[in-house]
Amino acid sequence: MSSTVDIIRQSLARQEHIAARRGKCLGRQTRGKNAETAILIVAAGKGERAGTSLPKQYESLAGQPILRRSVRAFAALFPNEKWPVQVVIGPGQEALAAAALAGLALPPLSPAGRHAGIGSAGA
Image 1: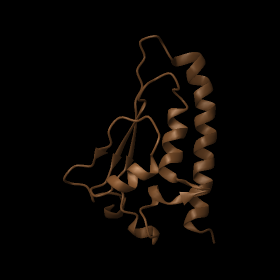
Image 2: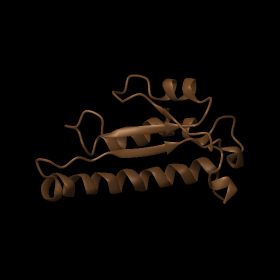
Image 3: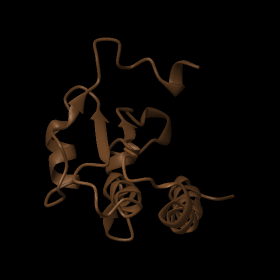
């Protein structure tokens, strides 16, 4: 039986592989001079079902928070754009997000709205 960390590690490896392949296609075929692309990463979950000390997006995987890995993977698809990635965080997660994303050139973090907490756990 795989642990949560093993499952996340496998998922990230697949996402990085897909992102790398898509980046090659986007660079050659679909990116026009006036094209604008934005990536929204919703990292507002509490991670209660994972049973970890932190929400999953802030847990470390191979020495880096999962959120940082996700932002870097998506930002690499659009290296010439100033802010291709916008991160939405949960209430009270400002310090965790700031630590996880320290040094990355990102626009200000967007806190989730008043209805945060209605996520996959409520599905």
